[in-house]
Length: 314
Image 1 (cartoon, rainbow, N blue to C red):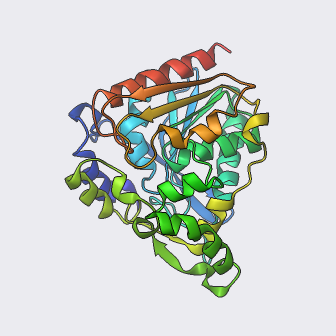
Image 2 (cartoon, rainbow, N blue to C red; image 1 turned 90 degrees about the vertical axis):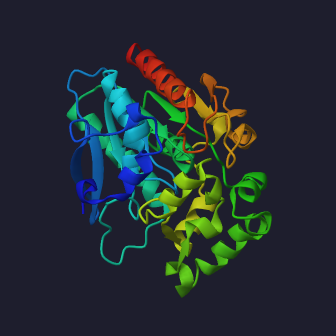
């Protein structure tokens, strides 16, 4: 399957401002990358003259095509090369037979993709991540080191109890879920798949009810399920470098101001500890967790474009 044959993303983009709609003339190229048995899908806007490459990571309620709509194409129109990846079990990536995907693997894939792109040329690479993808940018940068900067819509350290409690389906599952998933991950039940809308606060993905319905209908994003093994590895992931020691590259937080899932204070445990590189925050007015609203969308694109331009200059 490709996105040309997948209607769900088209239904979701109808809730974006018209300027953010992809048309047959503006849709990204679709590429495939073989990685340890997975056939990984990439949405790309290649541009050999672009000063910076931007790799886009989705979260646990979105996919690569949804990154292309809100950011991939807008950044490409501003002269940047963008690559939006579908991590295994999301989007239209084809998962290796019998593979048990974990969050640790997502981080390794992100790092390996950086190396693939670095082998092509020496242009700076910036990482962007939405929702859980925000912390993934941090984890990938900490593991790899060869990036010019990272941008997160949020930076959620799931090892922090408050973060788990406030982002889970309810406080009870947030309080006990990590312990339970850790136990089950050691049993044959590790392959059990759980709907993400029943383990996380997916109901707060977007602030428009009709848009939420369209998102839930997409089994490759918000309507997806995750295994116990993946969930256990996600909440317990240990970064290669802790925030207090992170000295890789500058960090930008683009925080939606109307985010009902991961408000600003949930990123504080991470960004408040980063002192060895510059950290800046831009609030996106009127924008929800997966931002559909103006002026937040335009503010996000502008802030990230400016951040990328600064990275091109060293």
